[in-house]
Image (cartoon, rainbow, N blue to C red; front, side, top):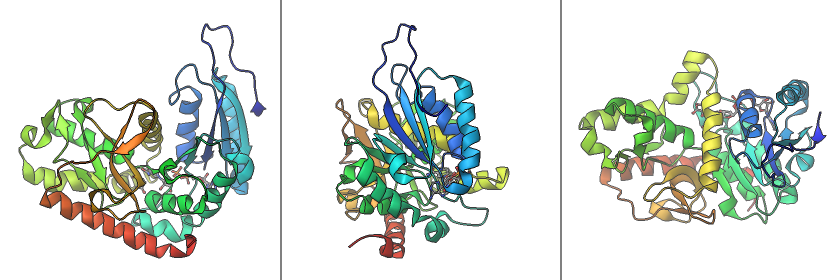
Length: 343
Ligand code: NAD
Ligand code: LMR
């Protein structure tokens, strides 16, 4: 069944009005992990119905129909409606959340920005359609690679939508970094906090171990092997996407969907006292990062659901060099897509 459907009654939970969530690339690998978790309440909780607008290109509409059948077959109490479509205006109409996944993944031996020429142009029309159709409270999270610069393109083509509504996903990198540090220290990943990924979701990203903490103690005091932190740790996080492509023959999907859910939850939920999370946002010049670039930084969400960049974090010479290298790559990517960014 597609379109509007009645929401669950009689389970003792008072349901809110449905939220519209638009997801591009819904018939793809990430989509297959993402849709079912959103429909089961993983982002918005047990009292918030969702209407899913599933956007695909025409050749994938058949496969998408199969995914919609499976959504129907789950009988999710929170699924208020499903709209599969190849029409961007229909797909983004009334959206409060847009997850821009649809794009080509890289293959073994490629860097993510090798995809710019193929994927970049997808995000001009999507930015325009979001501006025409989305709800006033829209949040846009770009996952399709190279996600920072695709987000830059979408944002610059979404005339009239505030820049603070656009995000690119580096949460998978944060989760990977936490997991690596936890394994080295012999603790659960949950003990790692204050982990910022700086810059680009690429091989230049900088997972900041200098400011990260394990059970409240600086990582550098818990893990005294500085050479491991500066070399193996950073390289492992930077190259994790490639390692997964090599091992699976396909890029990460379930962990990427999980990180997308974590990202939105962190943007909607007050951040724990003293902590921060990673997502790429439009820089206003913080930490010497050029204004207007979509760069990953340490972010907090307040009690009213507003996010801000955490200022005043120590940047030592080692970190400065790493951040500058990633920002330089973002500048070069912006230059490479200048024809897709309206003057
Ligand atoms: P996939 O090939 O399995 O699925 C992509 C889907 O996008 C396909 O169904 C395709 O038909 C659809 N698509 C292509 N062009 C589209 C368009 N213009 N509009 C709507 N849909 C379109 O790929 P996947 O594994 O789901 O990965 C999707 C993207 O996410 C890739 O670019 C991948 O590199 C990226 N990714 C990013 C992260 C991250 O951390 N930011 C992590 C993993 C993957
Ligand atoms: C990842 O980090 O796993 C994704 O960006 C996919 C890729 O190309 O590495």
